[in-house]
Image (cartoon, rainbow, N blue to C red; front, top):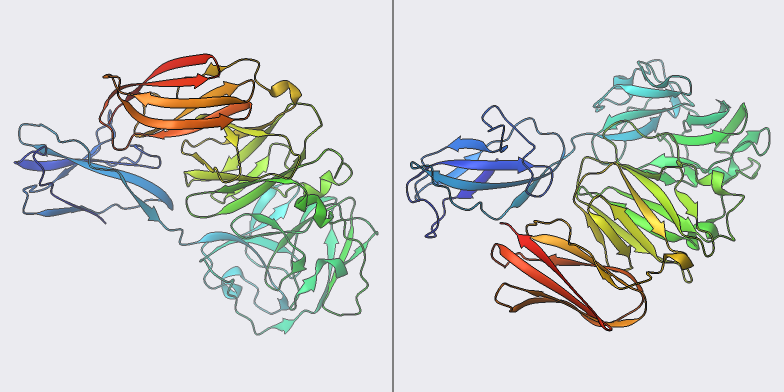
Length: 463
């Protein structure tokens, strides 16, 4: 339920009889429509008494999980409308989320709802030829996709524990199960030897590499050829190589950390050129999860790419989420080249401690890794994006050499209303966000001074 108080300021209609409301998945969006919505504007009319002695409310129904933005304006009986109120947000929580599960015991009744009574979906097995397929009965040794409430996986037990399992592997990706005890992946026996060519991947809101097979969980693993994998809780199980890449490959790589509006996270990596050349297959991610699950990966299907010395490169990133905005943070290794994030909203240099907020849904963006040729050859000042804007926008500029930089915003009277930069900056492409929350609607001018360069651009704030 959305509640709001009737306005008491002198700009709102005193004889308000109804309200216009907009609800959207993005800031100032109006894409969530109802039978009462105006098709042209997306606004829905909410008839109410509307007089200043009454609080008002609206009950939203059948909204899918995610983050929503909303605002209202009052409309009086002469159809004069007030300004829209400051935008607010609300979250529709996911009652069920996708999990990778398995059956670590033998039992006479292995129907999905018998093993997982709180399941919110059918169980999906994986076939390399047919993709995901619904199954009615679960089988020990196999992994499955299943929607479950948030928190630990809860299953009905009472069967006979399985402490050892021999799992048949096919060439390519396999969705495997677990036994009744935790088993380190380093103790798994594979036949033929060296057949595993990936990390072991579990799922917790996003794919993550795992060093332990936990009871009740499902895991992805990729095989070079048909074979078998022996999962045993016995301490005497021989330890053999699993094909898992060395941990120092990840620790020496730059990171790109993605987090959606519900807090679901995924990390991608960019590794140095001299490391990981023979190990890149180990960072291939499993097939994408079912629709609705959070997933971020390079277009190559990997979680890691390599940069090459002195060469400018662009890596395309695929994003699957319903919950914007998405925050992108970076952690760069020493000596790594600069990186720039390119999205429909513009290009933003990636710097530690300077998160980038992606508000516009996009199924693909890219990260540009700088080489020597990528340094700007001239000073420049780009048009802000978005424009017109409300209340935030980004301004990008380029510095071919280290320079003393001042970036100021002026109103039409020539008064400075904001100073966005006043410092010495290194050469490169720069980006800064301007927040005009407390400024009135109108035309503004921003001016860049760097070295002997002076650039001016106009921008329009519309509230």
